Figure 1 (cartoon, rainbow, N blue to C red):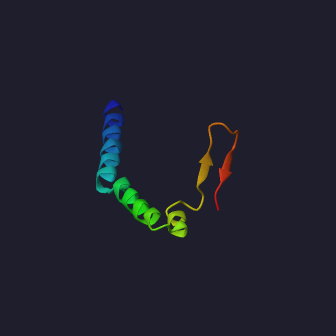
Figure 2 (figure 1 turned 135 degrees about the vertical axis):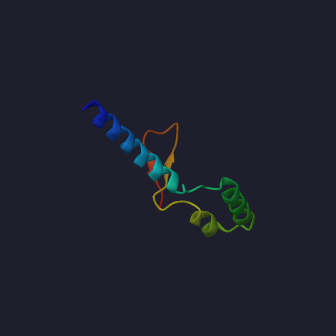
Figure 3 (figure 1 turned 90 degrees about the vertical axis):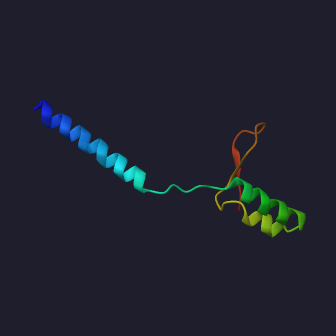
Length: 71
């Protein structure tokens, strides 16, 4: 019984590692975002700046209780 539990444990661990190693994680490039923001902001394009924010973005203000929902 002990061998079966040990084998099942290693099998689960192996399958977990196999699954996690095979996936490519998304990487977000903050430098690219900063470059885009700088270009759009310098061009005085308010609509372009607004497009860089998520549709469900929230603004947290430390001096106000609650938050503001954008869009």
